Image (tube, rainbow, N blue to C red; front, side, top):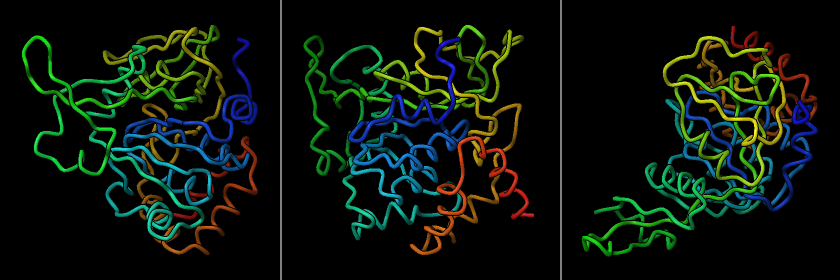
Length: 286
């Protein structure tokens, strides 16, 4: 499988300064290991797209990777704010962050229209809301058949989509199961893609009814990174590590504690150390 490479090689080959990068995963299968490698490689001036920016984007934005965030909800799920995102927006640290806020529906439709090769998405939405007043990319069209006024947003066409999946087979097909967000659409909409997986198998075997298989021709680079979604979860492999989401609130609240944690746990590590990083977080929480 020629597309199989190390995580460092995959990031180096696909992520460039100034790119638009979509890193998706909805509660489940969030590509944390890939985000750490983007930080280690010092990628800059990125436009980050994500329906629900949480800890990994807090880390990337806090380390100065991004100039803009396109999103529909942001926070530390079940805990509170993303302190590094807030610092970037409110104080310009480490650099000023522009934001473009949408609804979940708009984001999902923008990915779907991008995957379809269309310039914009049209849908029913934003009725009675104030977001169009602060986001000039939210517009409307009148249906030529019914006269109904519908909302539109530009399609998402990221330079790179990054997702974590459960398994790849030896032909380069990729399997996702469990709670899914817009991973499939993000990969199909993107010019390039990186998929980290728990393992490579000969055969996917029995599949759940909601299983999604990305055919090999839709996938760019594949890297085997066991635990690569941690502290989010991977169905059948490990549970969501709730303790770290709570701990992150204190780590990220101040710049010094944030930078110290990033230096110890990300900058001073190698991609192949991610499994050790996972073990260390578990031990620290016990």
